[in-house]
Structures are given as C-alpha cells and as structure tokens.
Image (tube, rainbow over all chains, first blue to last red; front, top):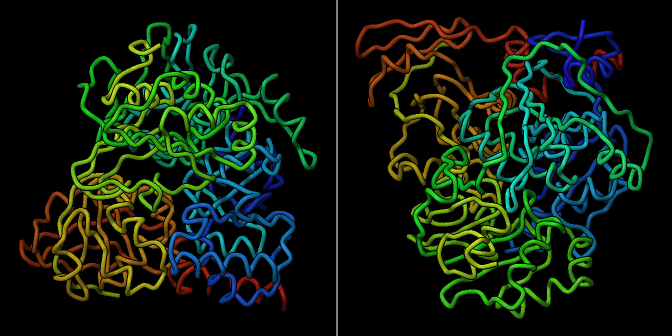
Length: 420
Length: 167
C-alpha cells in the first residue's frame, strides 16, 4: 500500500511498516527547538518533570531571536533563562547574538535539520523545515519541555493534501506568491490538522530559499506540516551542509490524498494578503495603491540572501519614498555577512533603509519597527493579524520582497514593473 | 467535573495574537498575561470576566502562533472552559497540556448567545445552556487526551510514565 511523505517518516520513526491517518503514534524526535519566548515555559516544564538531563545535548536548539538582542529588561530575563539552561545542560549548539539569527533561517543554513528528521519546535513556523523533507511541526512549550527530557512525542498521523503547480513562473512571481495564493484558495483553516505536499514543475524551478518560504507558511492554512518533493536542488543544498547522516523520503506513487489541488502559474501575478488575515489574498492589480508608512523586508519567511538580492536590485539607485521607513533585517548573521560582502547592505543604506542585525523584532510587533494606530505596513513576513505588528488598528499587507521594495520606493502599494 | 459560567461569544479565527498580543510575551507569569487576555479583540474581557466564565467561539479558535501563553492567559483569567466549532491544532494540544478543558461542538456554539449561562461536563461532553434549556453533546475527547487530563496535564502524565520506566 502506497504512503504519503508524512506516513513514511512517522512509520520509520515508530519502527513500523506503515501508519494510517488518524492513528496516534509515539515517536522519537531528531531535533527539539524553542526560542526566547517559548523556551522559558518549556524549561519550567522540564524542571517540574525532574528529569535532570536532556535526552541528547546535540539535538536541542534554544535560539534567542524574537526579542533578542534583548529589547527590554523582561526580555533580558527570559533570554538569560535560555542561556543559563544552554550552559548548564552543556548543549552543543550555543546561539548567541552576533553569531546566530532567526531559528528557521539559521538551522537549515547550518545543516542542523535534515531530510527525514522529525523536528518539533516551540514556534509555529517550525513547519519551515518541510522544504528539506523533514516532518517539522510547531508545538507548545509543555510538549517541548517534555520532549527535551524524553526525546519522544506523540502525534496523530495526519491526512495529506497535495498541491501541484504547473507552468512557468512569470518574472516577479515567487514561492511567496504560490503559498499566499494557495492559502487564499483554501482558507486559514483549509489544511487544519493535515500535511501539505507541494510539487509540480513550478516548484522544481525554485531554489531552496523559496521552497523554505512556501513551507514556512503552511501553518497559516492550519497545516501541521508541509513537504516539498526532494530533488537535485534538495540534495545540493543539504549535502554541503549536513552535520550528520540523513534519509530522503519520497511519497509513493498512488498514495491516498485527502484532496488534490492543481494550479497553473503561467499567468499568476504577485499576490498580497490584505488585513487582517493571511488568507485574505488578492492579486497585486486588485489591491488599491494605498499609501504606506513602513516596509519590512526580513523574517523567517523572506529574510534569506536571495530575498535581499531582489530587494537590493530594485533599491539600487532608487531611494525609499520620503514618508516611508524601510526596515531590512537579514535573517541570520551569515545572511548579513553575505549581504555585506555583496554590497546589498550599502545599497539599502544609500537608498535610505534601516538595516539591523538579525531578529524577529517587528514581525510580531516586538521592537525595531512597531506600528502606530492607522499606520500601513507592507511586510515580507507571514502574519497580518490584528495587532500583530503593533497597534490593533495598524494594517499589514503581506507580499514578496520585490513588491515590498517597490512599495518602499513608490510610497504606496505597487509592484516592480512600475519601478524597474 | 461540572463547570458553570457565563458565555463570552466570539466569531471564527480567534488567533493567538489577539488572545495574548506578542508585545506582552516578555513575561510568562500567568496573572500578568491574564491582564491582557483578548485585549485586541475585546477590551472589556480582561476587566469584566468572572471566575468560571466560558469562551464560546467559531471555527479555528487559537490559530496562529504556538504560544502556550494563549491558553495560559485564558485559564488564568478565570475561564473554566472553551467551547468552539473547532480549534487550531497547536492550541488544542496546548490547552490539554496545561489543563484547560476545551470542547468542539458547533451546535452548542450556534445555540449560545452572549451572556447565556452554560453548564459543561468535559468528560462526557454534555453542554447545557441554562438560559435556553437546550442540551448539546460535544465531540468526544480522544481517550488518550482524557488520560492526560486525568493525570492533571502532560507534565504529571509524563512523570508517571518516567517513574514506571524507572521502576
């Protein structure tokens, strides 16, 4: 009997030939992660268990990124909890500002999460690693604290929805646009409790960074995890980074799917998610050219080098509009250094952008670009809920980096064809 | 266990950013979180909610972030139970893990108005609207989740399992 990706990875970890959707399985986990917001509660759960030691010091990643570098005293206290635990438990990977970055940018980049892994994270965007072929999903702090002690967790085997993208991607249409369009089609609970598999020739054309953008947002459709079919791009990306052995799984021919969606991308435009839902998606041409106060280019969705390259190309010689704050935050220190060497950071600075060290910062209204009531922001991040980036009456439009950079130049929502 | 309280009625897709905005996540103290619970959706909630009250909402309750601070804030605000048409996956696990009873029951949601008095038995899934006199039956909670509730949450449940392995 053929199986989907998620069935095969869960079966392998459970020591079974196959598992069926709906079953509850108890499985070992390969990587457990948490950030400065979720780790303190996870560490508290771990301590209450009385386990003493973590199950494997190589496989626990505690990343200060949401409010780090420390945004205030309370954040500093939370970050200290995480740092002390990292030291006390002698965790192999110590993530410190200046040598780290946003968890979902940094862990794939360093080969710390790999194909075939089960990864659970105290962060809903843990699903990002599905682009590599890992079963990766977000959980709450208590689940994370327990898994830090036991190295195991339970999961319900999800059904799988399959998404196939046909045709050649038009210029300026990216992985971000494919996932926004998909969420717009199925809704913010369209994949609730399910796995999402992404394939088709339009996906094959995408580099790994754009694939990571796609799986980053499966949670915005309620998905438990997402997978991109492994191919030569996957192997090339992983082989030069892997820190340990791994196994690539493929969905079987003829596996049973809950639903199959096919999209022809040949005529697709850049997509925008309008306030206040990532599922409120329209093609760029149908979005009113509203004036913008802020543009944010960064986050675990679109803070990678190729995202910055597109933005830098547009901002080269084209200054940010007078009334706009354009904030650019490379997703990791490695991305920051590469962008520095390639001249992107100089381009951004000359165009009038703010450039910062890596942090989640403004994406969740933490700091480094919080919005006032009534302000409008075009953001390359993944959520535009009410109050997400600041005041409850601020408005956030989600877009790809080219649209974000173009909107910064124009001072209103607009696309690269208007500026380039 | 029998819970009784007044219903606070909300719509679909109540996300974790409105349940507890990220600007307050520099702390994890339950009482501090409770002071800001639902603030961006309903400014009256945190100041007016009474111990035992219930949240009754539409589909995809708790969508978005994995923050366990969301069910923690709701529980610490005094809410005894959340009844919704459906829950987002991570919130569903988190609520059980920290011992906040939640039930899926579209009929009860449709049959409940703001300020109705409800009586809920989480283990049997029976929901009575004391204001209208109607009775509803929620989706049964999976046995495995009931085991976690009986143990008092995931931490005590796991302690028991670790002790069993060690003995």
